[in-house]
Amino acid sequence: MAYNLLKGKKGIIFGALDEKSIAWKTAIKAYEEGAQLILTNAPMALRMGTIHELSKKTGDAPVIGADATSVEDIQNLYDTARNHFDGGVDFILHSIGMSPNVRKGKPYGDLNYEWFQKTLDVSGLSFHKIMQVAEKLDIMNEWGSIVSLSYIAAQRTFPDYSDMAQAKALLESIARSYGYRMAKIKKVRVNTISQSPTVTTAGTGVGGFDVFMEYAEKMSPLGNATANDCANYCIVMFSDLTRKVTMQNLMHDGGFSSSGMTEDMVEYLRKK
Ligand code: NAI
Image 1 (cartoon, rainbow, N blue to C red):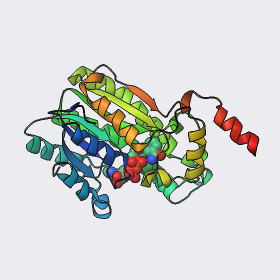
Image 2 (cartoon, rainbow, N blue to C red):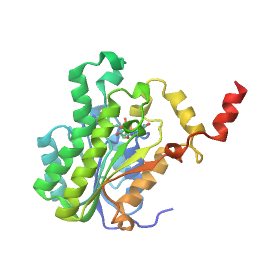
Image 3 (cartoon, rainbow, N blue to C red):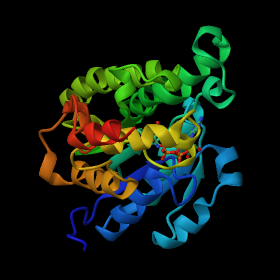
């Protein structure tokens, strides 16, 4: 059911690779809620993924290639957005994550440091870049909203998450620092949503992901939040109903982060 929460709003969605992507589900819902969109992903992902299908489902939203680590690509993206929308942007979703160390199964005690820098650049620093370029080009409309997606490994250790944990800590810190700045400059809010483990290309790339999901499911009184649940939360954060929420890391995990032990887990362990 749609509520017209984003009627007349214009947004840029980074990171829809395929229909499992959180960004994909968010784009579909944003369109249903009345938004006009521009879709973007890394040039390689445009070739490998199915983003053009998403475009068809979202009112032929333009698809613009941009490597989120490249300031020039982001500038080009925003210039195109300004022309297309004939003005500024009301919301941005940064839904980007990648670690070469995780992809190639490097143990935490034997990380490749060039890859580590790549992890930080793609998954953390790119969030700063999309905001710094937005500020310089004055692309955000007043009372706009910028959201990125994080994971609880920023606060607590999950062994196979490796250097992505540092990238998420960086991401959440950037949300606070740039959130302050964006609020002062343009009344724009900046938040991260810390999402449950979710079956996507990035998610399943982490070692032991299936066990991880089952553990989180049992440790979350409401169960894991799905990609669709996450998309709904993003919509609320883009809407005018959350204008004073900023500089927060918002837990979206069915209660996982506040649970020490659950009956489901006790029952599971007793049966073993
Ligand atoms: P996904 O694999 O569908 O999305 C990741 C996206 O990052 C892809 O579209 C990929 O092309 C894009 N990307 C990678 N390098 C890029 C670059 N240089 N420039 C532009 N885009 C680039 O997976 P998912 O799960 O939808 O990931 C979205 C976000 O959600 C990520 O930040 C991820 O860390 C976060 N997240 C995911 C969870 C999960 O379990 N799937 C849990 C918590 C957070």
